[in-house]
Image 1 (cartoon, chains in turn purple, cyan):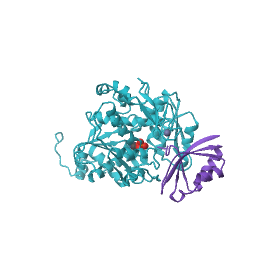
Image 2 (image 1 turned 90 degrees about the vertical axis):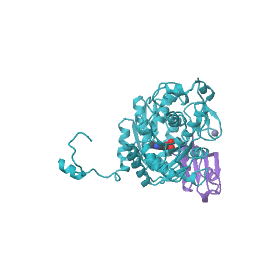
Image 3 (image 1 turned 90 degrees about the horizontal axis):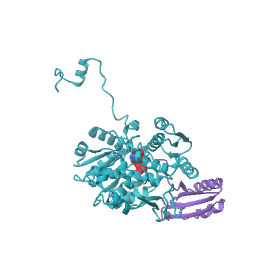
Image 4 (image 1 turned 45 degrees about the vertical axis):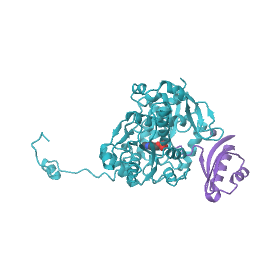
Length: 79
Length: 416
Ligand SMILES: Cc1ncc(COP(=O)(O)O)c(C=O)c1O
Ligand SMILES: [Zn+2]
């Protein structure tokens, strides 16, 4: 079991889709949103994914396939 | 005196002990150091600072470490150069260059933040330090770790230039080259930081690390004779440096070292990676991440951790932000070198380019006491200017050939 934290962003055309719900169903991970700002043309969430590390990796790949941009909670750490 | 009160969440205000943590468990917001200003106020004074060491550690009372067993005891207290030539050229009567191209030991302002980070890391009992970096940060961490006998891991992307890799290898840390694109490297490093009990300077030690940048504000004020400048120009990558210069100025007022802060904080980026400046100019309170494409690689952070806070600091101070093209970066490097004899890296070119632009726009006035922060050394980014500097004048080895080439008449030696 692991819990990893991510900052995710939605492209404008994906803002209305229930992506977090879908991810929770398609993969064996628990989703937990801690902070979010969703506006008409832009949206982000700070999100925790808990589960098997391999399953979290698959969920991230799944998010990316849906057009969501996934970064670590710290954003860019390579300075 | 216990000067550090807690780590506090910048978003929800929840407090945490002063350990190696950086994210709020409640809201996932970033943590920063909260001080006991009332206690600090009792001991801090201009006189005590002036009698302190000739390094940034003269501001120890406002830095987040407990003891005096410093890693990087010589960092900071770099020259504040009165830039008369550049000022005359640009039309600013009182212009200064804060010259961190000569910071000790690795010639960039990163020596300040890394000195604080590793001093704190050692206090917290860490024996291994790490960072993920493409340049200045890695150099500084590797050099400081070598001198402090700390085990060191430096993570770099797989496509880095040979000279930059060598700049790390020479100190013999573990240099780990990660395959994959930037986002992969970035995410891996964040996960490694989460899984291993190391001091990752800009991840789990970040609340302490970032505070080191305040010393650029402290030194500027002291070197100006305890005056705050009217305008400063600050290069931005993650936006941390700009945020902390603003914090540092306000702290000085808070503890009674100065009476008021009137400084406008101006942010500088390269056009090819300007998420923060672009948001500011569009009047937005949030930025859109970008894929960097600029020669100013030390500022090429597309999704900056402190971008939001930099926007806030600049707005609060009534400052401005601007960006410049890569050509203007090269011109900026040349202009600074040719007027003041200071060879800056590309980040310095960005700062000078933006300074020039802001003066032209009238944002920085002729009478404004202005400080430009030059944060890295040109010897590290020579490839950026190699096509712009021309070639030496070639002559035959004879006095006549020399005089002819330069159209000189003989003066019988000696007197000028
Ligand atoms: C030379 C130089 N100047 C300025 C900066 C900007 O610092 P920050 O990330 O705090 O905005 C960096 C950061 O990498 C740098 O290397
Ligand atoms: Zn919080």
